[in-house]
Amino acid sequence: MSYEVLLLGLLVGCVNYCFRYLPLRLGVGNVRPAKRGATGILLDTIGIASICALLVVSTAPEVMHDTRRFVPTLVGFVILGASFYKTRSIIIPTLLSALGYGLAWKMLVGL
Image 1 (cartoon, rainbow, N blue to C red):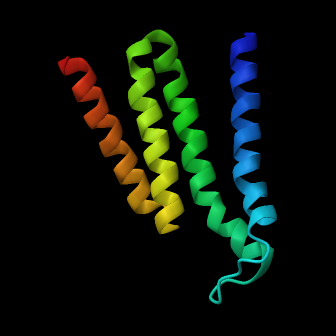
Image 2 (tube, rainbow, N blue to C red):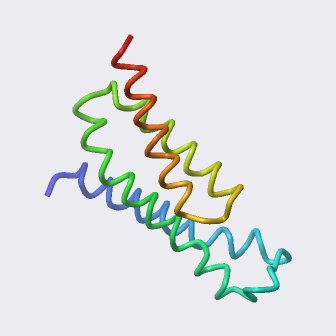
């Protein structure tokens, strides 16, 4: 096993952990009536954490081989994070980030 694979696994694991841990620390006073306590917050963040982990693992090899994919991937991450922050749902942000990646890739290749 090469060190790049190990490093990528550690990076994805740390980011995934932060996506699950930080909402518990940052949203302690912000409790929704439908979901109470740390368990509700933890269950809310599992979707975004798993989507981001899958996105990093699936795009890292492509970005390493073709550096033109970096900007569209970054656009996808930004759209995913911003739209999840606004909607608190994972369905629409996932679709929007795929659309944003596709449009950014098309604009980049079209130039």
